[in-house]
Length: 219
Image (cartoon, rainbow, N blue to C red; front, top):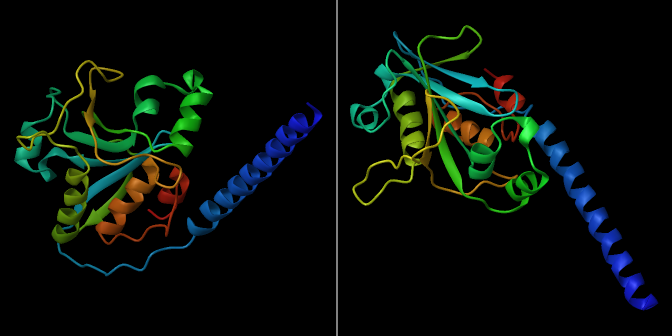
């Protein structure tokens, strides 16, 4: 009995040490790599397109004026009367559906999102007006097309190649969830998704940043 207890104690201590080392390394690389910037190809154009980035303090979204989005894509979206801007984000299904506010966050949801490959959703929020706190990003046409291609490819389409609305979801009457591709882990978070979109569009951004501040500081 003592031997079993000793082995369990030893295993627990080893696990705790490994976990702490992982967390410390993760935080260090997140801090370090988020301060290093990419060196993308430079684009110059007479009339750049403006897209935006915003954060709720944790999660980053990309925001497009609806005139910049493809007609085929817009036709598949839920209509919000008078809304000209659409924020698009990618993230963990559990966080999106079961954690509308941080007060409702469960430890099991956080652990599953961080350490287990979990299902993902696209979250679209429709806005009627431009928010002056949004970070502006100027893109030439080629850059915009590259960013949109990445965003569209993140939706998991049905057999008819249409995006799939998750019925009965959304926090308010101006936001909706759609089925997404890919899995969420601590190594590929909602903010890394935005980070990748910026890289695809040749926008100077962090080398790697799982947190929103590492994205926004370069914009």
